[in-house]
Image (cartoon, rainbow, N blue to C red):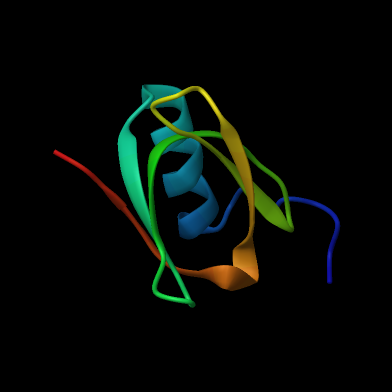
Length: 71
């Protein structure tokens, strides 16, 4: 697995745009748990989510079923 973030991939660009815009998102995990908040950063292995209480959660990419913006 590469340790570089492949910024040319549409999925990486979409997550980066969500981070830049500060968009609220819902993340569904493979365990059916749902998390909401704003994405803070991503790397090749993980994504960091900040919730309404300003708590950060480190989420392994392989645990994510989907990420969708909340309106």
